[in-house]
Length: 119
Ligand code: 5GP
Ligand code: ZN
Image (cartoon, rainbow, N blue to C red; front, top):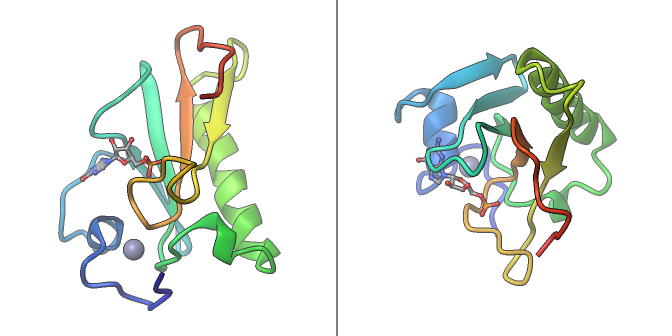
């Protein structure tokens, strides 16, 4: 897995650069958030670092970026008015984790009662 600053084949890097359109809900110097193209709930937002990181598994020692992305995910959940009804943050790593896009992202899901099952 690559950690290049700009991964030419990466769809989320292209979204971060603005080369591919997305329905953005939040952005700062380090983090972007945009609506999932195939939403699994009324609110389904993806929160990702701007720089290419293939998976959370590469970030164990980067608490700053971990914190920035998680804090942005909470801010997105609150701006989606999910705090009272509840929401789920989820991140997938690798084959068994069913990660399909190799650029780390946290799913923010809410707006309906989610299953108690995790897989
Ligand atoms: P993963 O399975 O890696 O945890 O989640 C990848 C998510 O990215 C999926 O929910 C999928 O619908 C979403 N996705 C894939 N391609 C695009 C895209 O081009 N734009 C947006 N907004 N979401 C995408
Ligand atoms: Zn990328």
